[in-house]
Amino acid sequence: MSTPLFTLGQVVATPACLRVLAAAGVSPLELLEKHIQGEWGDLGPQDYAANTRALKDGSRIMSAYSLGNSQRVWIITEAQDDKGVRNSTCLLLPGEY
Image 1 (cartoon, rainbow, N blue to C red):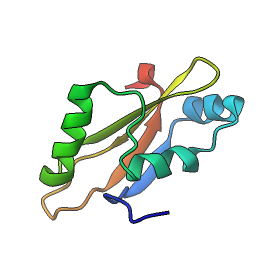
Image 2 (image 1 turned 60 degrees about the vertical axis):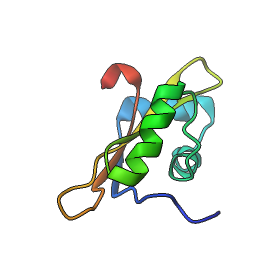
Image 3 (image 1 turned 120 degrees about the vertical axis):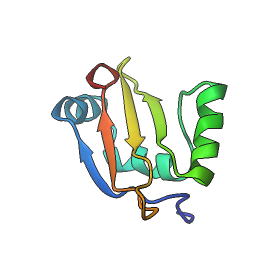
Image 4 (image 1 turned 30 degrees about the vertical axis):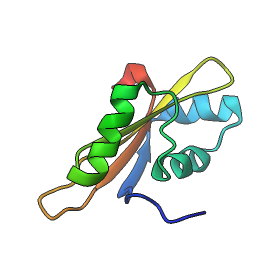
């Protein structure tokens, strides 16, 4: 694994998201690794550009991944606080946002 592009802070996941990942046979760690490496998943060009800016300005970073069971999972890393620290990352389903 190469150097992460940003820190995740505390990682949490909703119970529904964990159930969907388990049903699809996908590890949350697998998706988190993609997320911190800049593999943003199934996002459009505007969201990719927003994530690229967020790496520089500290704003929120989001990834979206389609699973083999027709479900989607989002990963959101919150913006940096006033000390430049990203405090949390959440794995969730789009309907839970």
